[in-house]
Length: 461
Image (cartoon, rainbow, N blue to C red; front, side):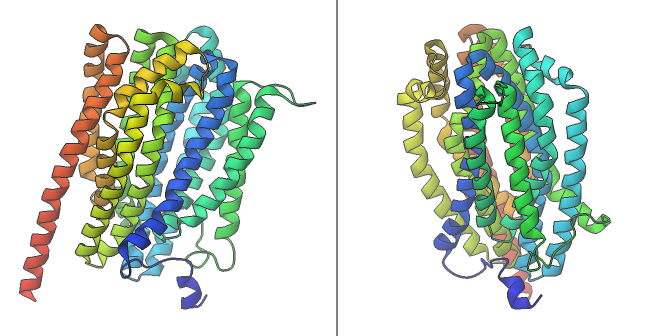
């Protein structure tokens, strides 16, 4: 493939208008995040018509899949940063090798975790301490959704490859196709149509699995074209120590941070179940999906920021990374004020869209009210995490996240013993505020060290 044709498959962000480039990169990522959220909300909206117990079953397993998603970030983040930095130094050959390595790792991990869940579904369902009928429904859901896990790993990895290449539009297009398909077949498989039997919540799992399969096929088709990204790189390769070491360095802290986060949240769901019954589980799982309005908006921009900074940082263009961070913060914090206000003042009304039972949406309204207070700080944390990822220092966000997420467990137990299930929500909200503030301060110190180092290097030239 000629150099010009290969260059058309990626984008160079080391020169040009910062706000325009960052926005162009971020909006498809935001849209992709919203598509993933819409996947989940579509399931919840239809499953909500089956009753709050079905929502609790699907929501609890959703927390488990969230943990799997966190593990899959190992290869995704590694692909984003390593490929972005390779492009920044004009080494497309290294970018292709990294793409093969992360894909090989994603395939292996996906098959491993799918086999684990299929072998012992009852072991994982029992953690949530659900009633027998809800546990049975959750087990059936997990058996089916487990078949989609290898697809999830590969889709996230391929998304990371395209994002690192500056082509965030490709994941958006293909995930949009999956969403449309999911919206069409979800109610058919849940409630039945003609000769198709009603499968209940298991139908939601099957719809998601089939939709993910279509998305994966589209990714493979595009990557295997003659003009595919990085010259038609192989999906499976023999792992080389030097590349694997850097992938581990980049991806492991992020994966551990997110896995730990998901485990903490599963533990919080268990505490919510003890103090609030199945309505407590429903409030946190469904409320968390609604909260995705701010989470996914921020994550889309933070991911774009990380990819953007990776190219400019490796090209030693620190001023461009600082301007990108400032632009992103101003935009997201302005939006955060609006979304926080919606959660605080209209939480119950928003929740009722998905679950029409009064007791459920009133309890969910309390969740959104309390979490609405800390949304801006959550956005601050994720945006700063994107900066750390871009400069290849993924450990600081992991350290801050793991410390304060761990504190949530005893804090939630203490507050819940005095305030009921709302104490769990306050524990989440208060620790989120601390994470956002402390991580931002840490980044400012890191930035000063980088600038000081660069001044020393320049003085020696």
